[in-house]
Length: 506
Image (cartoon, rainbow, N blue to C red; front, side, top):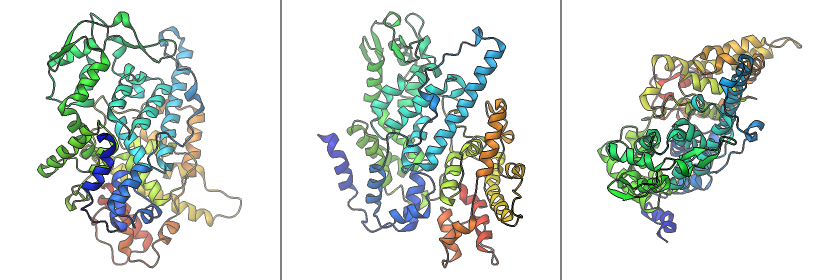
């Protein structure tokens, strides 16, 4: 009964907060922190609501599935790579097909983030992708990475315990953490170590014996070699007594996961990670008390993720003045937020996949089992330049669009100019597989890059009659680092605002 009362109790706990409308600035802050930079139409929908009402609307609007149709091949039987049995020609063809599908998969997810009516859903799917980490580079089977993405979205705002059990048996995870090689008499400790350190407890809340004993419990978790679905292999399972966290029994893998969920450190570990995602990546002393309070609610709710997020978003610390402009946008947040907020049009999101990857966030390919570190690690001299170049290219597209209007009828702008001025795959040669794009792939990229359109006049029209500061308030989470030039035109102001260092923050 208490579990079902938690949403009501959370609302009562925040009833003392002002029920007055948030207004545009507060609505924009909430929508940016919980999703991607919002268009002004989204801001207008939330501005009349109180913060508690707005949070409830966000949570009520989440989805458990994507609305963007996936590539047709996702339902094909997954192919187990048999590279040693292939000829050189067959191996090249297989690798090229898997590389092409990898780009198609990333483009599908990027398209969903760009079009979703629930940005919070995709932000949480991305969050869990960086928590229960797997990478296409090791898994090598795009269908499995797609299925994992579906799993993470289905549970993104559901129950953490259920997601932990499901993600631990996910075939992509089984491959990524070598769980299929874990067998009686020769335990592989990879999964047991990571499920404690990275998925549930964090360092300092377990010891080496706990890992070794847990690894024995996970023996026999494997895959069916014909369909690559999860399979228990009883003959490979160690049925002996294990002792984990001082408790002994003939534990199997599910029993160990339940022990992890029962551990007092688990709820606080997850809430602290959510806090770093949405509030502050350097929680201070005041934050610590709130994290403990919310972790207690999370634990009492039996790990209902909505309960934790509701408490975080309604916390006074979430909207504290010192938190404003305190987080750095990830590459995906920057790219998706810019496209959504500015109303950039496109026919294919593939160029945006390359931009995000070039800035350090290659979807479906976190750098290691710890995922992307985030925070200040997003900004280097190289990536900061790349972030500014992304904004500059959008303006060049707009200038070329205007120039095209002055070109005589029947004469189109040169596609190579569009590709050169916007974005091109060869600029991001460090992306795994980019060099294997075939001619069809390169031509698809060229067409996609040429389709990107940004109409500055259309964007600026919604601020007609308002002071210049309205444009900056719409785009920046705080004061600009560079003051407004006295003689700026609206377009010049827009350009300088997008290039202002504060635009990289949220």
